[in-house]
Amino acid sequence: MTIRLFNTLSGTIEDLAPADGTAFRMYACGPTVYDYGHIGNFRTFLQVDVLRRFLALQGITLRHVMNITDVDDKIIRNAAAAGVPIGEYTPRFEKAFFEDLDALAVQKPEIIARATEHIPAMVALIEKLAAEDCAYQTDDGSWYFRIARFPEYGKLSKKDFTGITDGARVDVDEYDKDSARDFALWKAPKPGEYHWQTNLGPGRPGWHIECSAMATEYLGDGFDLHAGGEDLMFPHHENEIAQSESASHKSFARHWFHVRFLLVEGRKMSKSEGNFYTLRDLLLKGYKASAIRMLLISVPYRQQLNFTFEGLAAETGAIDRLRTFHQRLRTAPTVPALNADLAAETSRAGKGFCEALANDLNTAETRAAIFDLVRAGNAAIDAGTLGAENVPQVLEVLSRFDQVFAVLEDHDAEWTKFALEWAEREGRLHEAAPEVLAQNSLSDEHIQALVDERTKAKRSRNFARADQIRNELAEKGILLEDSKDGVRWKRK
Image 1 (spheres, rainbow, N blue to C red):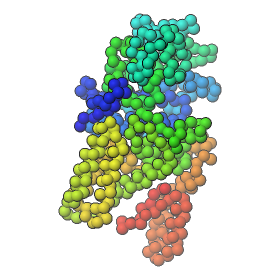
Image 2 (image 1 turned 180 degrees about the horizontal axis):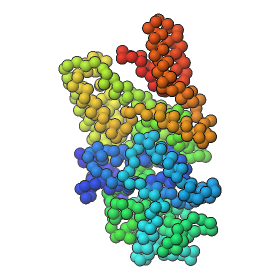
Image 3 (image 1 turned 90 degrees about the vertical axis):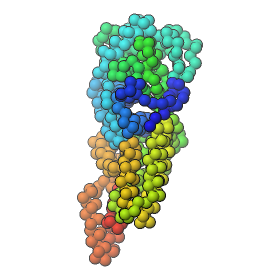
């Protein structure tokens, strides 16, 4: 199936395929490990995960590189405030980032590249730029990229920089969205600041040079796709293009994939607004990791997502419907004859699921196709018309759907427990919702024992005790579901 994806560089939807016909080479900007990631960050990583999972589902071999920025202005500032070297400060947050990716079922890239492990490659790239007269050294020993030497500057962000002032410089890694000035490639050290001794002189890399050096080292001078959040389009990605193409005289990346921001309850997320959430914040409030994943990929990547707690509750219900149907399908009684209507709906869902993703990763239409199948399947089970031949057909479509959406397997309780254990170690257990603490005070074994006791109580017609157990469990967020096949329970 031909995959079509919007290209920020060209402004059009284009076919997506490996240029060399073998492996799809993609680079995605990773985290700056100065703190815990927030849900806006994870929307980008999740949408990249959907892309890579769908490419793999289509049989495309991936060579996916993600960087870890473990040195930059914020890291240096925070490490200094904590009184530790950056090499001791960043591992904690890098570890937390990968734990959060695991909780959200995000697949790891084939290659993870840390900035501090690629200093020689950055130095070599800056030396090449200097030889092209695109880099110059200032009196303090820092090196800057000369934007005026790259006439195409602005081609990605579609900004008009015809009035660039040659020689005007900006020293900070992140700066005004409309500031077109020569940017730092290599920063001379301030007193007491960690630095490397190199042919460029003592210092450390600027933020933008990191991705250019690591992308080209692992993917070559020209590769298939570069991904990141829309906030990186300018200046970071614009600067990557300028310095990379000035050095190689080749196109840096053929396709640019940018994920839109999210709002929280209709407002821009910020700490001052009181609506800034990390994944761990939400887990401690009692929301499920799978529902957070589902919500963050529910709206196509080129549309702004409004993250609401009402929406998060709705996604929790949607996942419950999926999982319950998946379980019913495997245990429900069947009839010998094929249910032709369900077979047709299964075929439509399988086709619609793939076509929607191939059409610029339309995750909303993908979900709609699958939930239409869930409704049709439940109706057949309820009517006693589920055919034995229907079951493997429907399971196969659900399996392919889950290879991209990754929500059918229930690991939510594990990640909530993980968040509580982390909060206890960090002295933040007071941030957990009381019902989350109550739920997790019961082990799975204890819950099952109470469920078994309730079943015995009902059989002996001790309905008062059976109701008491149900109510006690409900108070602690444990929901029971009586069915022909026995009693199922789940944490709310």
